[in-house]
Length: 263
Image (cartoon, rainbow, N blue to C red; front, side, top):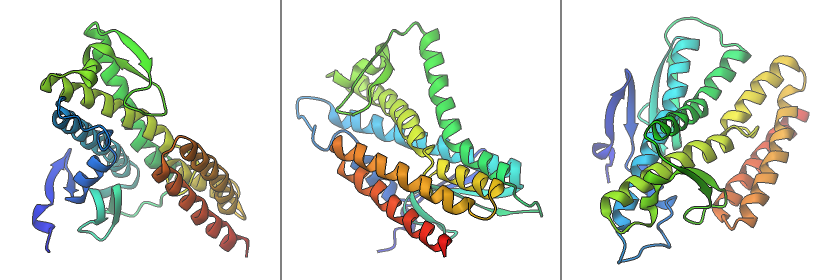
């Protein structure tokens, strides 16, 4: 079955974007609704709000990488969201920004670090902007665990109250605000963990290779193993088995990298 006709294509600040059909599966799979469907609540509107928040948060993250790559590398970036292979051949799991340099400019360790940080950095900046707007609108704020998440969040109550509402519009807004903050803060912070190939791992690998030319990559891989094992244990005790499996796989991947570099 040819799914290319269902790819959503557009340009964002001049950057080509392709949203694969599999991205919508990701939005549902990682939503808080799989075990919470209640016929007496407007869960479908909540799911739409969550999906909208996921889409905006992922686009903002990848746009940070793309704009930084343009600035630092003189690159021509492309963004793809979903699971599979982008039209330019890049592998995608969640989101990826790939680029082709348009002029000769050798990347430095610092420029690579800036491009890697720009993704989660712009996502966190987007959350800060939302909080600023909520503050100017006179919203009250409160913290706590929401929708079964293991990490407590601070939310603007006037908007996020829709999480428990029976009104469709309130449910949409509530889960959009909650999802955007949760993805921007929680996954933004996770992405900055020094675990390769996450953004934080790419930063530490680039800088370690610069300051320790002989064994910097291996040292970064060992740090990745320690952090990945720690996060795998954290997600396991939080009963997030997909998260535990994901970081256990990253620990194994970095163990293989460290073994190769030690030879």
